[in-house]
Amino acid sequence: MSRSYYRDIVFFIFDVTRMHTFTKIQKWLEDVYQYGSSSSMYILVGNKIDLTYQRCVSYEQIQSLCMKYELEYLECSARTTYNIQHLFEHVAQQVCTAVLDGSLDPKDVHSGVRYGPRQYHDVVCHTQSNRRYNPTCCRIL
Image: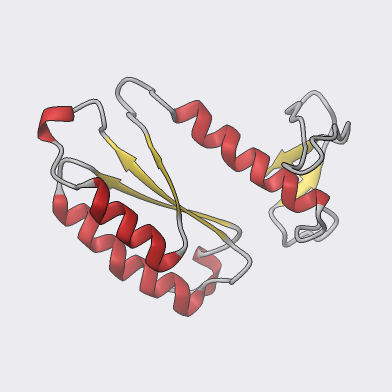
């Protein structure tokens, strides 16, 4: 895969009820570390958590993979929409934090993010350390 597939944010989504979807994540992670940017955000997402009794990927397996590749992990259910909004709000918050700390420049046309008028998305940008409000809106492309 070429570098253009791995830009600023990469989601690795697997089905918690199908082990082979989780084991394939390892191959994708190797590709990302070969072709991706070290400044990109990588998030592992376990889907179908509403199927509790069919779950076959353990938390220990997930934790081991996350520690090995320094991944954030979130679980969701596309069917029930559980945690879907939180997932995208979390990403928006990470992008805003990156803009505030200067690691992501909205003026760079290749960054995937740019400043936009408030009618698009009113995202409250703050850092964990000072929780300050930034009235500038971020538009995620």
